[in-house]
Length: 90
Image (tube, rainbow, N blue to C red; front, side):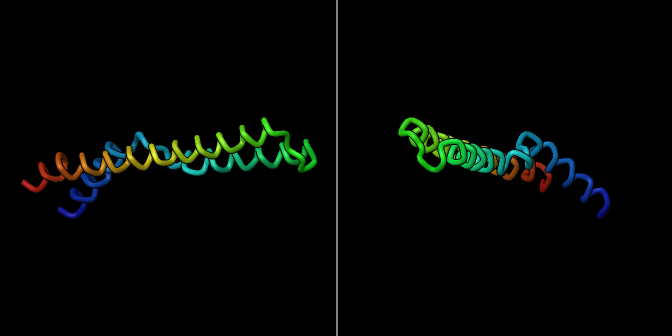
């Protein structure tokens, strides 16, 4: 019985969380840091105003994307708790 429960748990996790990629978690913040580093190297630490503004907007965009992923994950967890796990318990 334990093997069946483990297999069911694994199937539920894969089905529910498959849409959220683990690999993209750090993709945006790391990418923004790389771009900022390259810009500082190119402009020798004296970034033009347009570049400073662009980097600030990129950081905001990366954070917005991260928060969106958090909301998606929360929504999937709520759905799993209310629909899938409730059906399994009955």
